Structures are given as C-alpha cells and as structure tokens.
Length: 601
Image 1 (cartoon, rainbow, N blue to C red):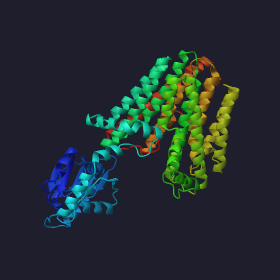
Image 2: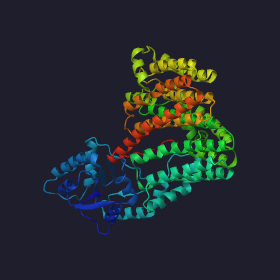
Image 3: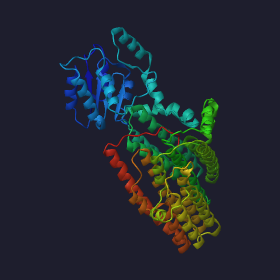
Image 4: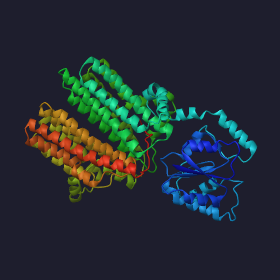
C-alpha cells in the first residue's frame, strides 16, 4: 500500500480523494507542514509516499503518471510530489525544513507545500522525474474562477483516449504501427481490466511462439500455415505486454528482462522448428538456421555496442547524423528507413508469410538476404557517424565495451604480457585474426591449421582489449568477436559432415548468445556485467573458440558432435542458473524498474 498525504484544506466537491484511492493510495490529511512531517514519520520506510495539494485539479491519468511510475525514485507534477523508499530521507529533510520555516503551524493557504518541497528536493540534488503530460491537465488553481476553468479543461480531454494512445511505443516499425498497434492496445486494456500482468502476457507470447515452432517442426503444409498464424499472434501478444506495461505503469526489472530474453528465445526456437520441419521433408537447412541466428545476433551486438559507446559521449554530432535528422523531417523516408532495417515486426511478418506459403529453405534464404542488407546498411551508417563525429568517449563506455567483448582468462593473462604500443594496430590485427580463423576453418576443415589460426586469434584479440576501448570504431570489437566465435563453430560443425553436428552447434551458439544478450540487459539496467567468475568459467569468446577448434582437430566427427552437445549443455546450465538467480534476486530486492523504449529489435 502507498500513502498519500493531502496538504491544506480539502475542497468541497473535489474528486481528488477518490482518484488517489483508485490509484492504490491510503489517504492522510495534513493541515500544515508540521502535521505533514508527523504523518510522514508514521509511514513505514518501505512504502511509497506522496504529498498532494488538496486543491489539485487534473486528470486521473496525470496523477497516475506522476505518482505511480515505479521506474523513478522521485517524481513530481504541479501540486504533487512522490518518492519511493530510496528517496525517503531527502523528502523527510525537505518537509522538516518547511515545518521549521513555518513556526506555529501556519496553514498552507496561498502557495503549495508540495511545490515548495519539490523546490527543496531540487536544491538538495534529488533527481525528480517530471512526466510529459501533453494534453492532460495537472494544476493547482489559485481561486474559484481558475478552478472552474481547470475543471472545464479536464472535461474537454478524454484521459482514457490519451492513456490508450500513449500505451503504444512512440517509435516503432511500420508493420507494428499500422497492422498491430491499432488493435493490440485494446487487448492491453482488456488485460489490465482483468488484472493480468505484463509478465503473464509475455509468458503467453513465449508459449504461443513455442507452439508455432512445434507446428513448423511437423513439416506439413498445414503445420507451416498454423505456425505462421501462431507466430503473428505471438507477436501481437509481444506488443501487448509492453502496451499493458505502459497503460498500467506495471514496469519491473524482471519484466524488462523477460520481454527482451523471450523475444530472442521465441525467434531462435522458431528457426529450430523450421529446420526440424525441413528435415521431415528430407531437406537439411540447419546450416541456414544457424547462419540466420549468427547474423541476427551479430546485428544486435552492433546495435548494443554502438549505443553503449555513445551512451554519454561528448560532442556527439556528425554530418551523417545531421543528414539523418533532415531525412526524418520527410515523412515517407522515416518509414522506409525503419522498414529496410528489418525490425522485429517486419521480420516476423516476413517469416510467418513465407513459412505458410513456401518452404523453410526459401524462408531462410529471404531472411539471410534481408538481414544481411539491413546489417550492411546500419553498420555502414554507424561507421560513417563514428568517423565524422568528434566525440570524447567516457570510461563508462569503455568499460561497457570491454564487458561486451566477453574476453576470458586467456585474454586477461595475455593482455598483460603482450600489450601493444599502438591501439589501432592491435584492432586491425584482431580483425585479421578473426577473418583468418573463420577462413581457415572454411578451406581446411577440422585440423591443426585451424587450431594454429585460433591460437593467433586469441593472441591478437587479447591485445585488442589491452587498452581502453575509446577509439572511434572500437564499438566494432564486440560484434567482431561474436562473428569470429559463432562463425568458427558454424563452419566446423558444417565441415564435420555428420548428422547432428549442426543442431549441436545451434544449441551451443544459442547458449553463448543468451549469455551475451544477458550481458547487454544487465548493462542497460545499470546492474553491471555478469560476474568475472562466470566469464572465466565459460572461457570467454577466446577460450571457447580455441576449445572448439581443438575438439574438432582431436575428435572424430561423431565424437565432435557429442562434445559440442556436452559443451552446449554445460554453458547453458551455468549461464541460465546464474542469470535467473540474478534477475529474480534483483526483482525481489527492489531493483529500479526499467523499460526499453528504444529502437525496435
């Protein structure tokens, strides 16, 4: 239960008290600052508390946005302020200051105690979230005429319509915006009115996608048609969970992690289902399924690395960015540019339609071509931005890139032994080493030449991260390492030419990719990277790449398949157990709620 302290004399006919109760607040009334201080001291320290001027006039949704959003320790809107337990001490100091400044219990009659407390919190350095209200009304009228005008302004705006409209993500893909969101927002409201949570909808979306993958695995035309339809329905639910979170402000750390993680699990499980379905018809497309997962994961790492490198960069401008801003002013170019990067809505729609109408092989060919074009387009644009902007990157950005690089114990040791004097040379050598190890595996197949190439790759990749990653193109290091590791596993499994090797490799890459995605979500949530013991336990990208090449050289193809399977299971168990423990603990201990409103994945 949260507590709202109404300050000042209640206004006859005001709906404020019922509005606050509808939002889950227990009400207290304080006639002056001293009374408010006493009531505040009685509220348990682990509860949210709000100070609201009794003269407040506004929409219920304005109060909801200002007083109930779990993402912010402190928030304010005209005539109201709220804090969560993390900011209770600061609120206590502010109210105490107002109490001591008003001896004798002078009633608050002219100005607002809540607004004076907000000013004191600002002075104290407390970061206050002030929600964008748009057409919503939130005011403290000074006289009856102003109150009447404010009430008329409230009546003129339908806050439920505003609430529905703002439940939709402000920046989304063409397919999602025009084919899903117009009705999924109403599904979100239906869920909210029945007490369903975003996490329950997220789970339903996952289960639907897994059933879709199972239908695709049957290999029948009916199964493929059902799979396509279920995949679209899963995406509708995927949109609904975020819209439900925005509609009802049910944000949480666990929910953000589940939403992001399940998106990847759904898509990659569906790839596996398509590959199994193709096998039913005698067509082996596991290499294509694995290639699609590798390409899509590397695309995401490019996005994550670039964003983290420029998270708080100074002088973050470039002619390329200016051109992009100009294009955004032309309506149709915005949608074209969003569509050609093949975001999740367009991608899943394409996969669903092609699954229902064609074959898994054609589906994967189209997916690979589309994702390759999108990756080239986005990466080229970001390279141009990085080369033309004069940005000073921070230690935080360098640390994030180092964590995303996922270097293991071998790199830790080698980076101290053979540090390069020239960072740019080290980065180029890492690029060359990554290309050489994949090409050697491609042309020579499993053997000691690949082990030698992997050894060289380990040396140069360790040298590449020996210095802070603050160069203009250093954000390319993590996706380069992902491409080298995943590509080596893919090629060696394909070259093994034994039934089951590619599915085993698919499982290994999926387990490692989960670890890399988990690293991103922790950094995004300001929770830090996974613990070093975990990275050391699973070897880092360098250790795993070298290990896979050694196993391929030492073992017969059937034994190599078994080794890949065992390695996939071991990595999956370690990273899943630690990740689930971390996120559940973070949720239970009240970690700050987060929600992703960025680019569509």
